[in-house]
Image (cartoon, rainbow, N blue to C red; front, side, top):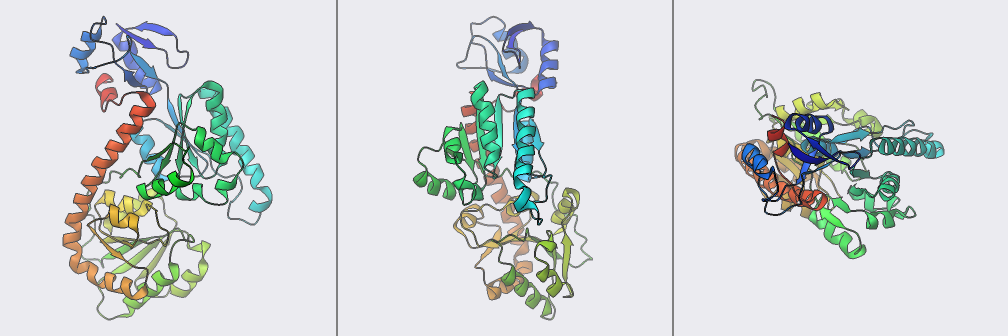
Length: 406
């Protein structure tokens, strides 16, 4: 027999081990506190599951579901983190195309719909911890209303532009961030900058979790090797310089690599029209997660460029997860994260062309180095994650759910 809180009502229930297993599996609960050594049944749990506590309450306490709320169709960062935490995730897609001509007239309708959907979900499921992604600013602001009403914890997962105009200028947004339990940022450089501007903001660095991929080796050696160029056609990507360098490299005789480019090129169609006929440059367009993973694991390397400082690029983290060497921009954040296993170059056409030419020769060494970098940052990420869980839940017990639910 074990003592537990019911996940939704907070009433104390006596339940046996079989019922406890069902409860854990049904509600995806996590142990927070362990019974004291002198508490009845403590030794049963310690002997049966190998769980020990140096301090704790006089009962076993379980937390109800944690949920991620994202006002977008998909984003890999919260998806990977939610899978790691084994908690619920809710992607709320646009009902109006945010890049279409009618967005500026009816954006308020889209946000109204998402606000109502979010509030209905939270009030129905009553999660104990809410992760809200920003931008847009309105997502954490709506979630804060629920958390304030029921005394729950709000964690804001802030992307870089969440702290820039126009989002940072939304009334009450900064106050919402300051009242949140934690505000997550992607890298230490951004946290240091924000701490100076917003000293009351509870900032914590939690980088993107490096995803798990099967090892590289799917590339057909008889086919032309390629670099996977990951684009979103956003304003921080040096597209003119990049395409110029790729075309110049391919026009040189005897070059060893092609380029496969992901991303919706319709956002800036001039590049597609100008370079679609260049031999060795292939526009894949927007691809599914399955196809992206296939192209990623088959690539010799990944190209991920940004002109923005203090940015951790998702493509770089994904390449690291697949054990793929990279060509990245010369930024302080990239220099710290990719201290080996990558060619770090300035955003200049000539520098990129040299990197493309050198990459096949350096690939074997870079391949070994990126595996070392991946191992290092996975260990560092786990430490940051454990610290966050300790703050949120009081204790982090890796693998406790799995051992109990066996």
